[in-house]
Length: 298
Image (cartoon, rainbow, N blue to C red; front, side, top):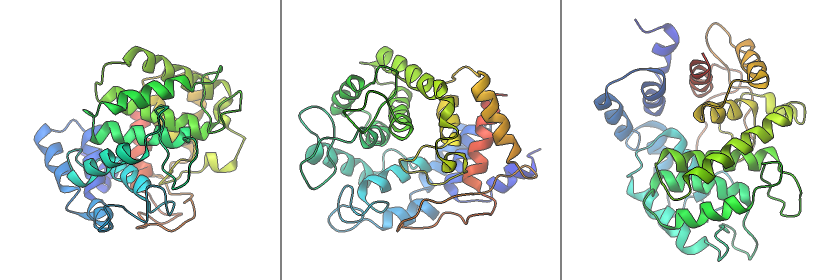
């Protein structure tokens, strides 16, 4: 018997159905595959794909304007779990490598000459490894990111900073996790250690709990922004040990539950292709993530 919350999730967008069957249910592969292939033809996935222009870009360019750009749209499609073989996504990932990769191995998605932003590099790695796992330049990007680790294990957009920041660090963690989950081999041990060190860096800073009130808000989409639930999802994907900091965060998450559901508490401002859900209402994305984290940590 499926519980009420699972039934509610399965009444949502096909992407939520796919994610629920993939993570929360022990579903047959044929069911999962069928749902994933539907994402590009229905609902949120179809809407995002339809916003691609004749230039091949979403928005105006790789990072312009912010949330409707090619970068953030490809990132959003990856979060929805769209099939990695969708050609529109694969072509733009390869084109991004062609047009934006710097000699150092990082990415410059701006129209002006500037160094790479490590947070954006991490996000790009996340969807590049997902859509174009066979692309050799992924290894170049990973090798570059490995050189950018700060002494305490974190990462920062600020090359001159001696320590990392939570936003950049979580973006790099997720990029490395996507790399590991695709089974790409060349830097596996170094990347696993880098993820371990980066998660430990956030743990050692008490999850940056009191640094910004928004970190404790249940948010979707999160874009490049750090928050506690986003960290818990990353830690659970890595099967990081459930220490006292994670236990406290899990209790915080449980305290936000309302009759088995979680609400969307915050949406980062800015123009978007679509509004997935409304603030202060039950959120399928947040509920799915919360259930998956709690399921992982028992």
